Image (cartoon, rainbow, N blue to C red; front, side, top):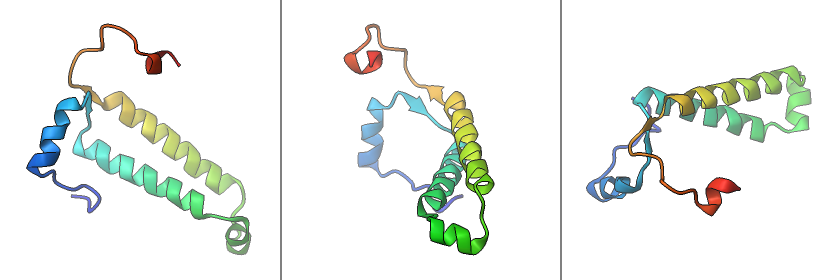
Length: 93
């Protein structure tokens, strides 16, 4: 099990009643990997990239990987309850 996935205590479990979607453990692991890849991109500045010989293709490939993996994760999420009967303002923005 990934170190990034923590077990929920009873108080946190009670907050799940507001959850609309659930992810599998594999999806959570993939989400953490995508997050870590994005953090690496965020920490990569021009000086580091130049000294390491990294061109634009490397970061672009990481961004594409993260984007595709996050889309795959979202499509595997399980809806826990039905869709709201009326759209809220946030849904229409």
